[in-house]
Length: 269
Image (cartoon, rainbow, N blue to C red; front, side, top):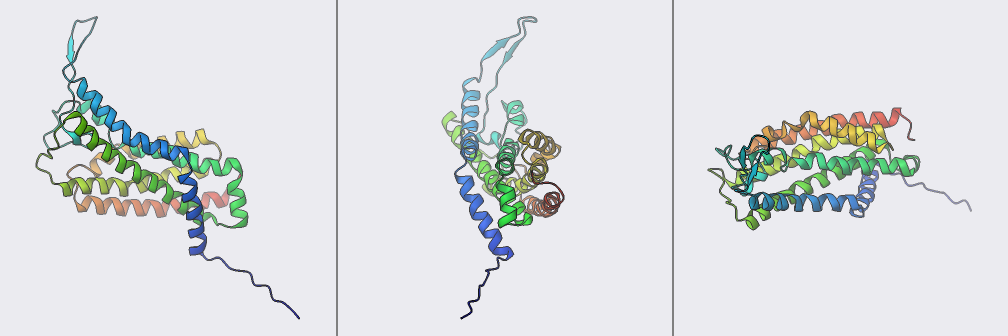
């Protein structure tokens, strides 16, 4: 009696679903992921509280005798962006450089380490040989990086509010509404897709050379970094969120296709 052997075919959806499940589990077991999330929560708290404690302290230039008085933050939302008429608030120079937008550069570490570890361990070569295709691999890595980046932004936002409460700062929005605040955060989350797509492309090109992927990603991200505060300000509206979403999707599709092509045309070792 003849027995027929049926080979189960895996379609795009099933392959992508399997890839996402594996990467999600790997992300939850990654120390780097939890370290970045913890930093996103703790950093704004420490920075806000320390700056508030230094408010009014004086420093003297030993050469000129000039006295500089440190001005601490006045508002809890200075960690997120510049409020209307808030240019003269204390601590703006510090918060202008070190604010929630640092999360866009921080997620680069997660993406680069997450991808380079696949090539360094030989997991990627085995994966492409046995199961997944390169397109699903790029999609999965981009989505994992986006999830990590979005969580970093949310935790940084929560840390800023908590730091402001501990330091006793004002939560006045200077004429803005909480809808603007929500649209600001949503715009930044959608904009994270742009940066993650760039980091993914550079990482799959660098493969197991982690140092190269991180340096290249930081350099590529800095080209757009200065635009983040202009595209997603504190007075953001649904228009800002829509533009950031459209830009994020376009970058993800375009750079994702290029990343897939890079994987197909280059060696996996």
